[in-house]
Image 1 (cartoon, rainbow, N blue to C red):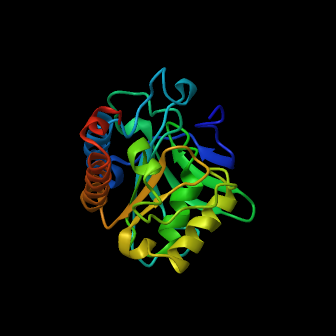
Image 2: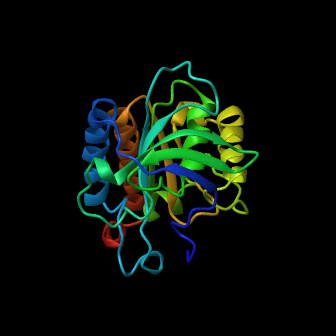
Image 3: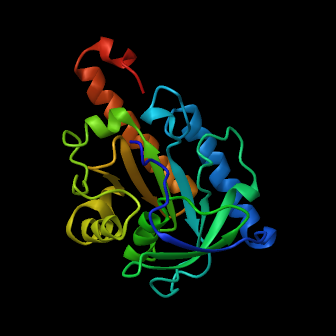
Amino acid sequence: MSNEGVIQFEARHDQRELDVRRCGGPACELIAWREIMALTGLVGQEAGRYEGAGYGNVSCRLGPRNAAIGRRAFLITGSQTSGKRCLVLADFAVVDGYDYDRNVVRSHGRTLPSSESMTHAAAYDASPLVRCVLHAHSPVLWRRRKLLRLPETDPAIPYGTPAMAREVSRLYRESVLPERRIMAMGGHEDGILVLGRDPTDAGGVLLRWLARAYGEQCGEGAAGLCAGP
């Protein structure tokens, strides 16, 4: 996990303030759900997890549903912000465009966008109905991904790369991902990706699957409920 949080694409970033009128409302919705994720250990930074690296990020689409593929702008938490307890608008970036073939992400804001921006972009390009993506780290969901029959990316594919973006697109086309709206990242320890129509919808999907995973854990023995997040 030593590369966790490291940007692996070419970042063409314009260091300027985000438009409060455009981004303020969506940022507040994302901050609310990120707070719930932090309280449940799905996002954050801890000395005892992943070699102390921050984990988890959230995003939502901006603009019309019919925006062109590769230009579906979205608001996303900034790089290296997972460990922050409270976020403000300056901790977000807007991804304006992206190119999988050239491994380029174009963005603006006071901070660089998350290292997972390419993966979020692929989810938005997969369907105009996808308007929010939550990237959580959940050991209980990840360990039970096969039992729960979650769509899963190839373990050989690293996070935040064009290859991962193409894998997300493939899963959306060829698996139950559009119906279940949750997937496991096979080569990204504890990594879970959830898709929704908006932050509240995506948050509900995440919590329902989390409850299902804990239910399976309970079935393995009551002592398992105290085994960790």
